[in-house]
Structure formats: C-alpha cells, structure tokens
Image (cartoon, rainbow, N blue to C red):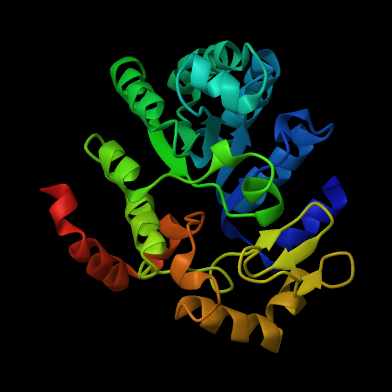
Length: 290
C-alpha cells in the first residue's frame, strides 16, 4: 500500500488501534513515513515483523519507538525454539536472527518505553517447542507479552499441500494452557467445538484493509470487500447498509464460519467494548484458571 492510500484511512479521524502487517512491513520502501502517519493519527500502533533482517527491524523500531513511545508495539513472530522455528519458516538461521532482533529491541524498549509482543503460530506438532519458548521468554525477557495465533483453514494449502501445518488439537492447546491461559486460546477451544461465544467486533469496531485498499468487515467470513479506498472515503464505505448487516451477523455469530472461527485478531478490542459478554465466556472456562 502506498503512503497516499494509507493516509486515506485516517480521513475518518482518530483511530484507536492500527495493526500493520504484511508480508514483511519493515521492508516497505516507505515504512518510516507510514509509521509517522499512523502514529500521528492513532492512540496505538502495532507493527508485525519476522525479525529476519534484525538490523532493519532495529532501525524501523527505533524510529517508531522514538516517535510513539508507549503508543507503539512491536510484534515479533517466533514459532518455537531454533529447530522448530527454522523448520516452519523454511530458512535456516531464522531463529538466530529473530532472537537478535528481540535482544536489540528489548534493550531499546528501556529507552523509549514501547511494548514488545512475541507471537507464536500454533500447529499440532510445535506445542512442546512453544512451551519451551514461553519459559525462555518468561525467564529472560521480563514484560514481553507472549500471544498465539492459529492457522486459518485453507483447503488449497493446509489440506492439499502440507499436512504438517494443521491446527493443534484441543489436547495440545490444553497442554500449553498449563503454563499460560489467554482468551484467544479459550476462544480456539470453543471454535473447535463449534460453540465460540467470545465477542467479535469485526464490522463494528474493526475492519481489514488490504494492500490494494479493499475494505472487508472480516476477510475470513466474507470473501468480497464492501468498498475500496481508491474509489470512496472510508467513512462512506463504513456507512453502507451492507457493512451494518455484516457487522450484525458477525456480532451474533450468524456467519457461516463464526461458530468455528479460530481467529482472535479482534478479540482484545472486543473484550473492552463488550466486557459482560467476555466475562460470561470466561466463566464458562473457569476451570482453566483454577
């Protein structure tokens, strides 16, 4: 996405949270300007990175941290310890590089007071390695938040090409939850059981905008965009009847994939907006916290 198109997102005014992802966003030729625009118009900006080019990651994070301070979050993707992470990423040395990035930005965070998250993609075969990573982070990087994502089912990829990259079983997730319990993990268990109850704010409090400016209420539940920023202002796209109808379906879990949706990209924002529903879902899993 070019800078001018990115700027059009903020014609609606201040946005609470922007998540910049890719691809690898630190390699975007205009990433510094994009971050400047984002931090000038938002209360919180999260930048995803694989940390492979650790010197570039440091350079970008230093710029954003200096500008945004505690309004900036860097998220590094680490899918387990060395052998596991390198296997998933398909490049030997990936783990070594991202750990260098983590060490560098961790030191930098003490100066600029931004937050660091580490996100692990969970598969059925990497849970033990993720647990080992979690222990390592807890012992060596105090204050770094460890989050988790689940691969979204895609028949052309997960079903036909690489059967090792299948989502984890409930038993494997519960093994991880002996060390850390988070709402996204609980939501995944619900999704596997076809009974997801945690709130979803896509289409109401959140949206997905792709590199070409296409705007989706939810890219998982609906295959077609509701508009494009090259053709309309975001405010105009957001005021459409189609957006309202899709948001209601998502809110009440009426989309075809909602009850089995493993995505938790909006969960923490939705939890703040709908605390009662979130609390109800947490009570359902009270045994996990005891």
